[in-house]
Image (cartoon, rainbow, N blue to C red):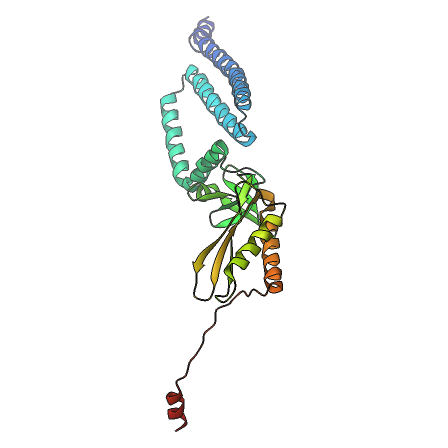
Length: 278
């Protein structure tokens, strides 16, 4: 009789309340998990409506879901009577330690988020950044991938990219081709200028607006230099530069105009030469 009363008392005092706490904690966890999934889907839908990059959407929603599940887990443990204050302090200390250990990675991550949000360049753009130039193939969370003109793959940390100057050659639809051509001081200035204008205006790829510029820019040590600055579509930049350089050389040769190169004239006084012979 005593044993039956003892077991019944123990069950009423410990097992029943604890079982109720377990059931309630389990309910909190399951409902919280469902709510976390629902809220995560809502966040995904909102981010997609804002046309945010898929990489950033995936990363942001994974962080949101992880934080929600952490909150749900702490609530469930609290229902079981676990001291969550110590757990939160432990998680904070662990987070601080991980943050200090991964300081450079976190810097690259923050820069990657900024690059994806503000989009100074996109995949397919030809850019110059962190001292290298190439076509952007991928923008990741921690690093970006470029392909150089000779088909090398460059992996550049995002922290270095965002902390420096970014030059995007593909951002604008048009570009100005800056060229310099020199003639000899004895050549006909007006003839050379008119010939350069004729070459530029004959190229159908050169845009009429803004108007091309051909002007004398410098009286240099060995030549009279002209600046030639036509505007072209972005895709025509290199073909126009190369073709114009070749045409100028051929036309200058045909018209008797010389392209000077650095040279040095040495004058020896006669008396100095005689003294040397003596």
